[in-house]
Amino acid sequence: MNNLGFLFAANLFVWGGILVYVFTLMKRNRSLKADLDLLNETLNKDKRHD
Picture 1 (cartoon, rainbow, N blue to C red):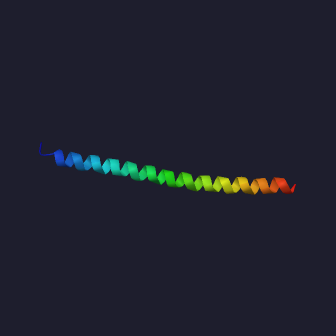
Picture 2 (picture 1 turned 30 degrees about the vertical axis):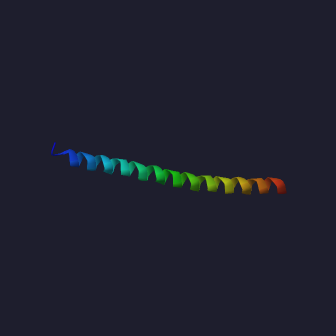
Picture 3 (picture 1 turned 30 degrees about the horizontal axis):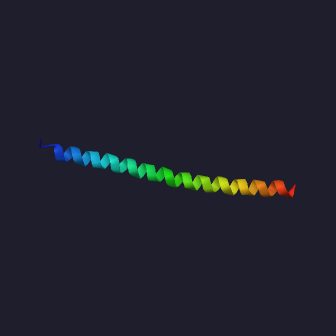
């Protein structure tokens, strides 16, 4: 039972890393969506001018 603290710390570290990774993916996803929206807007402008 002496290693229970280390087990808790490792578990906390792993879950913290997973949460950071998920939030990083969410931020990248928002950035990509904004880029795609801008691209769609630009392409739609070009189609209207033709």
